[in-house]
Image 1 (cartoon, rainbow, N blue to C red):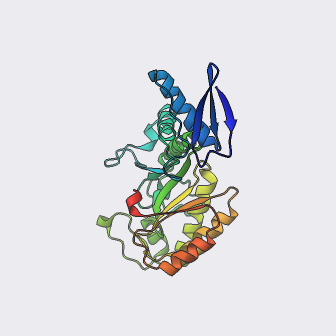
Image 2: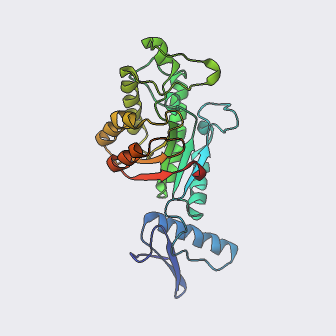
Image 3: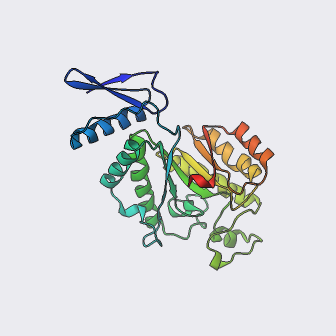
Amino acid sequence: VRLARSAEVPGHGFIIERAGEGRVVAAGTPLGFISGLLNLAAAMKDGRRPESVAEPRFKSRLYKHEVGLTPGARRHTYVGELDEAFWKEYAKTLARNHFTGLVFYPGYHPFEYFLDYREFPEAPSVKAAQRARTLAGLKRAFGAARSLGLSTFMQHYVTHFTPGLVKKHKLPIEYVEADGNRLAAFSHPVVDRYSQYVYRRTFELLPELSGFYLNFESSSNSSAFIKRCLFPEMRKAKRPVELVYRLWDFNALPEMVELVKHTPGKLRLAHKVMD
């Protein structure tokens, strides 16, 4: 098998051609090569003719996976229980089927389940050893995906924070236990500093993560928050950060236009139907 870089193959597509007794896989991106090689291998295993996909139907096709960040999570497998071999095969399946990225949906505010909280130690409700185990699981999953050229995202509801923050800083906001961690849409300097920290620390501890998939249901016009808390941390990060804006329930079109104009990194726009 010989690889041939070709600018004529659009997107993450690939072309497989016979060359004597072998094959040539032509593509223009790493993911295109990987997808072509995986499809060639599957065809050889099944004894069928390999198919060329010169141009995938979707330029960006993200696979959303609802995953648990604590053992025994309702309906979801705990990410810390899945080993590297599992995630490597999982990533191969995504690449072979023309997905371009992986999105984890782990709940409203995933940060308190995997960050080390060198700052704001009062915030998390999960013990440090458990958070470290979860972080290791996330690194395995996202690392396997990135090794095959896939983008990786974590969905979270913007402006969320934790009950521990409310208690420690006596924030004037009511917390209803039955409503889970839906503490959001509350402007306060402590919440801003906390949000900036969790973004910054995520970029530092989880380089395998391409970026965030932002859900605005918790705060239907949080453009000022994004500009104030997320954009500065993206600019300071030592690597490029990508974003997906989930447009569902965002209620201020002019503000979204401004966010799009000023986003300091690669951006995708999606609607809830994408999920």
